[in-house]
Image (cartoon, rainbow, N blue to C red; front, side, top):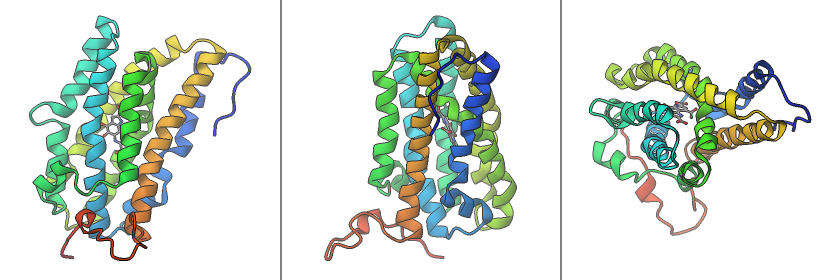
Length: 252
Ligand SMILES: O=C(O)c1cc(C(=O)O)c2c(n1)C(=O)C(=O)c1cc(C(=O)O)[nH]c1-2
């Protein structure tokens, strides 16, 4: 957890401290470490793709919520690009559906969100609700975990072809596409943050917001780890409860 600051940081110090919070990025979660090392089973990869799809569909929804909170025209123009990155024809949602197909998931199952674990749903919904309820600048800065995202996308591009040769190459388009998009988003998000969070109280608030977002991503990984690696999905110990509807059927 980040300690509260008692003095105003310069923009350089403020940015360095925000970037330092990358130490808590989900790239360091045991589930992600196993994934990039090639240790995940097919079911675990499918589980991650299916659960992450819930996050994917939430991103343009939370971006639309930010738009609805009335940022200035210049920012709205940039924000529209974020929405089209995901929702346009050939955009991120379609690329993620291709990833789903590439890992052997049925498109309808993915779209239905039938495999989404409750903790993943709660975490992602918290992100949408935050964007709906908070002033647009706070919601805009919460996207700054994207500072750390190019590294995680690049890591997948570098390691998946060797570690998971069964995944069709077309599935990797999403990660390739995000490399430049995330960098552009970060430039905009950072310029808003460094400019507008310009008192000790606001800088402390920015650290809290970034922590909240890191917590969302980490919590999603916790849920996946529990369900797929430890084999403890919700209600696993309750006799007679059929957890079948969330179970991924894959032939290894
Ligand atoms: O694969 C990842 O680990 C990862 C993480 C994040 C993130 O840090 O929030 C995003 C993405 N991917 C991503 O693809 C994406 O489009 C995205 C948008 C946002 C956002 O908060 O607006 N985060 C992320």
